[in-house]
Image (spheres, rainbow, N blue to C red):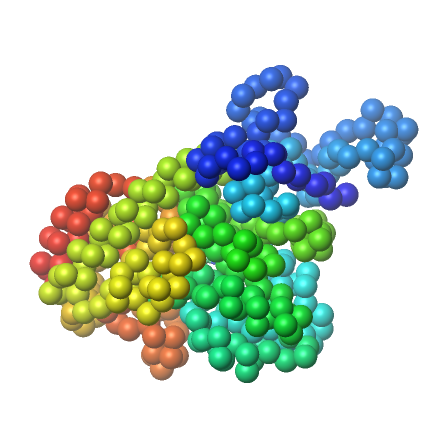
Length: 400
Ligand SMILES: *Cc1c(COP(=O)(O)O)cnc(C)c1O
């Protein structure tokens, strides 16, 4: 039922070349250059002989739209190529990718290790749903390899972390983490949403699987929701099967938009990286800003590791306003360019206050435990001109 995505064979070509060409050189019936949107729920067989050939595994083709679709396949092959691996499974959201992966890999009563700085719905899935399977989770500080060593048990199935994390952009020492986990037979799963394969390729540094909310940088235009999981054919096989059973798939039209967005991934990341760095520096130098977290700044706790493992630090900048909740609200409301909205990774800059957005329904003590203060701001720089972004932030900071 599941179809291999294969590698499109762009070899050692650069990120931009691969982002444009990978996964799209299969000759289509019409010789159309753009990959068609295969807007279909099912695929027909010529006769029972063909069906039998397929059922017996002698013919590789599509069968039903929950298992595979040619438009998906182009996206999957493109991302596999960018991640430098064999296989990718496309999902209808980043959450579908994460939840299906967890369910595919975990036995009843299994143990996992996760980090405390992470996407809140991933945390909720672990607490609210995986507990029904009696799965136990040990939560550790990101980037603390000593705590990781202590947390691993004989029944630990995997270590799951974002890198960089949200919202503090902690960067994991992946080669060291992978060494520790491999010794104990534990898989390493990395949510690489904030970095993209242009800035960081976790699979090349020892991770077993890399997940993305493709909603963010991969799609890049704030216009669709999608998710992915990539790794070796062997690692990905049970996850592809889980996708077909759990059904968290992507619509072919959204797959087409994602494919289109990914063609400019490397180009967009250059600007996101440059804007993130310039904005972080400007904020750090501003008297109304108490503290800035950005891996490209020397002041970030993981600057050294990040500089070694990553080739850019993306567009998300987290900072604290020198002031209380009201002062912070005056700042975000005064921003003219960034939209006040959740999400990140699109061409339009977005700004949010975690205390009012992702964490609004948490009790104050719990928010504090996750380090979410009243004056915390997360800015996702888009691809606007950095001078314009900085000038806008400066006029908004004047209102603080
Ligand atoms: C947005 C996000 C998710 C969830 O992805 P969706 O596509 O919104 O389902 C997971 N992890 C990280 C790091 C994210 O930023």
